[in-house]
Length: 268
Image 1 (tube, helix red, strand yellow):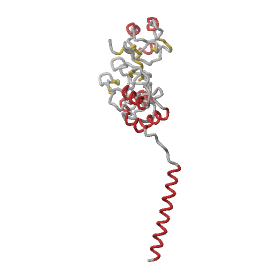
Image 2 (cartoon, rainbow, N blue to C red):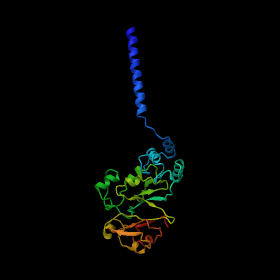
Image 3 (cartoon, rainbow, N blue to C red):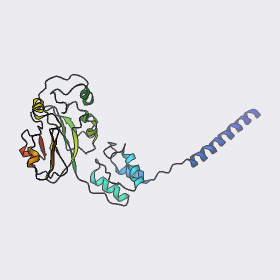
Image 4 (spheres, rainbow, N blue to C red):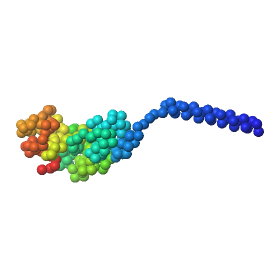
């Protein structure tokens, strides 16, 4: 009986000692977390889409608290209302942001770029980009396997059966996941002016004759857009036109493009 009591006493003493050690260790290495992190995380949509440039909403909340504000960052899915609420909580004001739209820089539809071969392998743009130019032969155009669709957490992109190309709906929150997923960098975020958006729906850098062999609406680098623009907003390099931040969406370049490679949104 005495042995049992002694054993229990020893175990109790060991337990108490370990408990004291754990207590002091926890106090020594305790990490303080600002309660504002939880408050800001609650304001964020919880999509964890990465559109803000961080790994997730909580990671973004930690950045905001650490830096005392948004510091030029924003939550695309949350929009202006969320950013204003966060700024107010942090005792400041959210910076005005320019509205943007994600556009596809390719118009190689089934009609414009007819298939020459049949791709019958892994349904992945990333893989198809490594093993083939594309069914139409253009090594710059959309592969149509839907990697952008798979990564979209908002059901904002779908492959149009008629054209074979992704269509972006009004559900898009500009998170940018599709931009990262495209192996040919065909999706891009552009600022939207009061007049709309004008962009080159092509990435082909081949000479005009070669480009048109695979796609009838490819940019041919003819320079007509450059000559018609009064704002020096269009340049041509490597047989491909590019529209820069000087563009006011006057639409002159699009109206004069012989292959209709320059697109307008909203559609006139």
